[in-house]
Each structure stands twice: as C-alpha cells, then as structure tokens.
Length: 363
Ligand code: ADP
Ligand code: GN1
Ligand code: MG
Picture 1 (cartoon, rainbow, N blue to C red):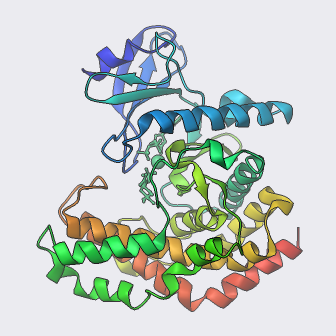
Picture 2 (picture 1 turned 90 degrees about the horizontal axis):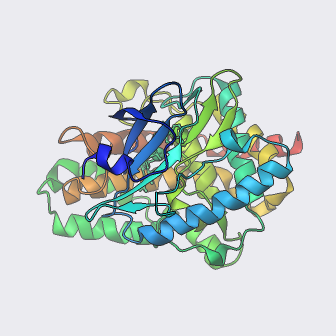
C-alpha cells in the first residue's frame, strides 16, 4: 500500500496535503503528514518489523508508558499535547495498521520544535539532561514487568560482544580484512565491557524502566524557549539500566561532530557539555539515583559508546543489514567516530567521575 492509502486508515483531522520523508532515524521510515488549511500535522511511521518483530507488544509498551506519562504531566500542570507523544488511532480504533506487509503507526506532530544532530549549546544540553533524568524519575514506580522486552539483550554488552565474534567468524560481507585494527580495538576492551551487566546481575545497581535510545535527536527542543520538551522514539522502552540512558546522550551529545563524520580530526569529546548534561540529568532524576549509579555514570558513557561502535562494526561485517546506510563504508565510518570518542573518554574518565560527584553535591 502507498503511504497515501495508509494515511486514510488513521483518524487524521482534515485533508492530507503531502506526505514526505522526515528525520534522520536509522531504523524506521518516518514521514511528515502535512494537512491542508492549517490543521495540525502528523508523523506517520513504517516500523522496521525485521528489527521489531514483536510490534504488537512494542505498541502496547508505548501505549502504557505514554498513558502513565500523560497522567503525571497533567498532574504537574504541564502541557500534555506538547510534552508527551500522542498516538493517533486507526479508523478501527487500533494504534497501528497492518497493510498486509508492513506495520504503520501515527503520532501528532509536535510543532515548532527542532532536533539536533550535533549540540553546541551547554544550556540546551543541560535541559536535555534534565528531560531525560525526569523521564526516568517519572517512570520510577512504573511496573517494569508489565513491559515486554522488545529486543532481548538490547544493551547486554556481553551478548553484543559474542555476536561481534560470530560476525568476525562468519565474515558475511567478506570485509573483515578491512577492519582488523577496529576488531583489535574491541578485543583489547573485552574485560571492561561487562561492568554494567555485572553490576545489574550482582544487584549493585537496579533494573529500571528506561528509554534505551536516548541519543540527542530523540528529544524535541521547543524553538521558542530552547527547552527539551518531549522525548520521542519510544520503541525501546524496556527494563534496563539508567547508565545506558545517561551514556547514550553523552555519546551523541558530547561529540563535537556528526556520528558519521569522516574527518576524525574534528571529532572531539566536549567535557564542558558533559558537565552541562550531568547537571541537568542529576537535577531531573533527583533522589532516584543511587550512589553506585552516580559513581558509574562515566562508565555508562564509555560502555555505551563502545557498544554502539561494536554494533556498527558488527553490521559492517554482516553486510549492512541492521542500520540504514547511504554508502558502502558508512557503518565503518560510524564505528571510527565511536572508537575515537571511547579513546578520548577513557583518558578523561577520572575527570568525568569528579564532575558527576561535583554536580550531585551542587544540587
Ligand atoms: P527512528 O526510530 O527511525 O529514529 P524516530 O521516532 O526517532 O525514528 O523519528 C525520526 C525523526 O522524526 C525524529 O528524529 C524527529 O526529528 C522526528 N519526529 C518523530 N516524531 C515526532 C513528533 N511526534 N513530532 C515532531 N517530530 C517528530
Ligand atoms: C538507532 O532509531 P535511532 O536512529 O534513534 C538504534 C540505536 C543506536 C542508534 C545509533 C532500535 O537509533 O540503538 O544507538 O541508531 N536504535 C535501534 O545512532 O537499534
Ligand atoms: Mg530516533
């Protein structure tokens, strides 16, 4: 079915003017649905069902979480229409539409917002941190068992490492020899990779309801105020660790260049932005963070960046079957930026720990 035919299946107000590809996500196909006569616009998404096989449970997760968030935001006197994602039902009253091949869903488009691919403003990043911290705090008493783990082992770095070893072994793309240095970079860090998995298994840090994909283009920033108002891309909300959520924003936001920048000389780790995010995140999460989590925040940033690099490298070895790519070496280029960031963060890890503790003490 065409996207125009699919759009007719949703309860959109007014008449469709155009439906055009939108955003820079690596997973789903996203479209902006513009309506005629100034009616509000919509986001229409074709879910990547190769990755999200259990789309029914995924959509149930989103429904449950957005319902809870809406209630909390309302109680706090916030503006639900802009601060929470609103699913649009189909004509049959469902929250997704199956066209025989694909699974589609729609959200109200939150207007007058912007997403950043690179952040240069500490104020915006501090605010982003506050929004993500608050997100976790708001879901603190949400029953994690009521959520389905839509991608099992999503941030299980031990499992990621084993899949990476399999990919080397199988060398499906035949490109292994182009990536020997990168492969070594990962192998040298094998021992470090399991720190969060171990801490969760030992009960040193809690399993929580987390977002799991907190990169900076998954939060909408209000154009007028510069405030991070709405957290989006809720596909991976699952039980997880706060350290990955903190870390993924740092991975994406403290990078001075794009995730797929080819010129590594402009890829740097901005420690001032790190401090700004810490401040905001710790304010947003308040007393919900434990001492052990606080002491491991910098480890979260390093491990998730390493994990992301490993995932890009694994996909390169597998022949680009997971992430959307625009040219043959795209995944390898992405892997390089991540490994450069890992190297830079490792060298500044003591400073990163000190900053987190200082920010917590200053709240
Ligand atoms: P993916 O899973 O592929 O990353 P996202 O859900 O993150 O897809 O959407 C891709 C992009 O579409 C986002 O980065 C954002 O720019 C835009 N977007 C998504 N939902 C909305 C919304 N409700 N209002 C405004 N923009 C949105
Ligand atoms: C994907 O969907 P998107 O583009 O926000 C990926 C994340 C990665 C990220 C790397 C479901 O995020 O896990 O960290 O790319 N999402 C999924 O940019 O795998
Ligand atoms: Mg996204």
